[in-house]
Image 1 (cartoon, rainbow, N blue to C red):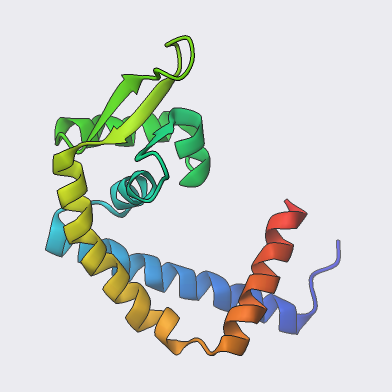
Image 2: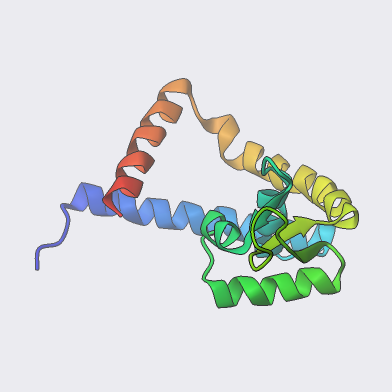
Length: 147
């Protein structure tokens, strides 16, 4: 087995460290300021920003990169707080389940998104030049295509 060259391996380690640091900051702020776990916010954000305001269970799992059993447990917690609801889809034969953000969930998402995106701007997006944005799009596209 051959290791990646040292420069590329260092970039990989820097990426992991930066992601972990940002994830820790976001998780801490959401828990402290909004009493929300970061995965809950990610689910609510996916629903709030979807075209229909709802997503089929499998679409949501793919969008938030969660395995179905983990997503189901997260949704249970969000339903307990009345932030989301699982409903039968009216677009097909009624067997598919869609997840919708409730009005209470939408209000919680709006409030939490201020905290979340304030940190994303401060720690990540505000530091990027246009050249950085183009380069990162190119890099992340290559990574996703390799999957």
